[in-house]
Image (cartoon, protein in one colour):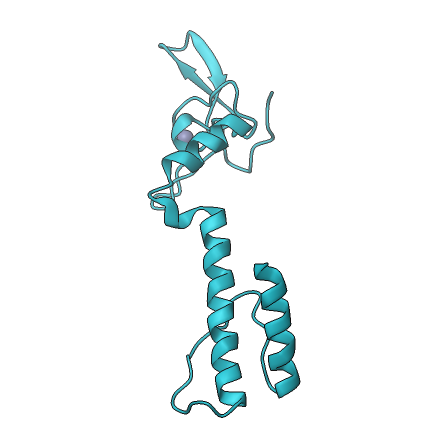
Length: 137
Ligand SMILES: [Zn+2]
C-alpha cells in the first residue's frame, strides 16, 4: 500500500545494489530535516520503518505497552479514581470546617480535584454529608 509522499520525499528505496525496490520510510529527522533512509515495514499503514512507529498498534500490542509502562499499583485507573475521590472529599471537608467556623488558617492551595463540589453554605454541608454517606453505604 503506497502512501502519497510529501514534496521532495522519495517514495521508494533500492536495496542490495539495486536488486530490491521497496517503500521508503517517510519520517524525517528533526535535526537534519533529511528523510529516513530505511525501508518501510510492510505492515505499516503510514509507510514508516520500525524506528519511526511503523508497527501497527493492535489491541494486544497496546495492552502489552500499557503493562510494560505500569511501574506500581498507584498508577492504575482504579487507583487514580480512588485518589481523586479521596482528594475531593478532603477538599470538601476542609470547606465544611470553614463554613461551620470550626477552624481557621490557610486553605489548601492549587487546582481542585475532579469531582470536587465547593461547599459554600450550611445547606451544602448537609448535602455533602448525605451524598458521601449514601455513597459509602
Ligand atoms: Zn524511519
